[in-house]
Amino acid sequence: MAYPIDDLTNTNLDEALDDPSQARTELNAVILKTKAMLQQTGVGASQVLKLDSNGKIPNSVQSTVTSYLPVISTGTGNAFSVNLGITAYEVGRVYEFLADKTTAGIGSTTLDIDGVGVRSIVDLGGSSMQANQIIKNQLVKVVWTGSVFEMQNAFPASNSYFI
Image 1 (cartoon, rainbow, N blue to C red):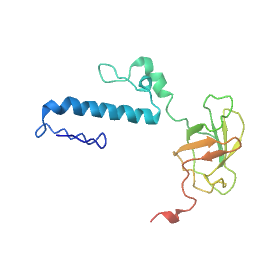
Image 2 (image 1 turned 180 degrees about the horizontal axis):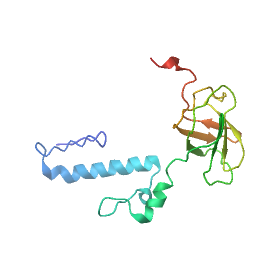
Image 3 (image 1 turned 180 degrees about the vertical axis):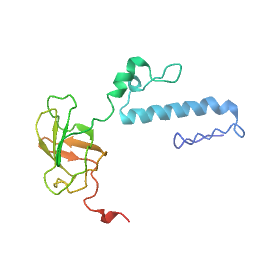
Image 4 (image 1 turned 60 degrees about the vertical axis):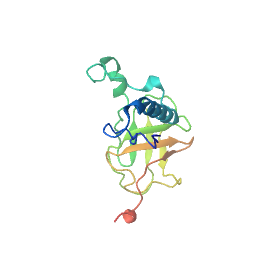
């Protein structure tokens, strides 16, 4: 009897109904599927966090884990500023921060990372940001294009999309 695996939530191993002798084959298939998913996302085995015997994050890696928490922006008006520890913008790199405010008006929305330089944030279409496209406490994701920051997750410019 074959045990198809469509995703990791469906292993078809039911202890009351299935043959336990098939468990090893089924679990190996789940492991292979997991490895394939990790490869697709670019996560290597060295990047997977290992917990200690108490199921907690070891002290030796807690500072590393903490560094992945989003940085909260500062600034006034539609200007955002963050400290990420960079010395230059890299084309194609994604930068993330937690917005300290909601954008208020139409016009120039800017970002300065580590004093490298104030640059405009535009939406995916390259247009100027509109009011409320960045919401307070939103995790903002931008990509540096070489001339502007292109926001990857802007809210729609109007609420006409919502019921």
